[in-house]
Image (cartoon, rainbow, N blue to C red; front, side, top):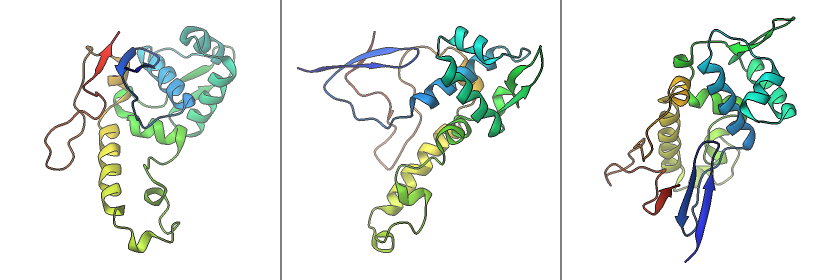
Length: 181
């Protein structure tokens, strides 16, 4: 029997057998950690070294992420001695979809979803419409979760996010053999 260790910034799981998953980049994971930290202190401005130290993340990566989030309009930056970064809007108004799109580009499971006409098989593709449905469901789930929700502690355990097709409600993120440690 094979066991797989899955780690995120906040939890560690052990499961039997391999797990296939859609992954976000480390940059996006760190960006979400930084934004949730900022959301916890909306009245405060943080500079990059403070955020790196408090989030236990590498300063060069933090600096890069903060500049990118400011350029994408999710953060505002203030120069000067008391300068730093803060959220551009209330955490309740920022969705996970916006954050991921800002750090990774358009949310798309397959190439043909984000760039129409890029594939010569597109006119005859028998699965394109289903990939579009799946992509819309993933995007809707991410649009439905705000930064303020991510910043709050959630009780451990699976949370149902998406229902696809006629198979009934399923939690796409909690395989049956997943155990939190």
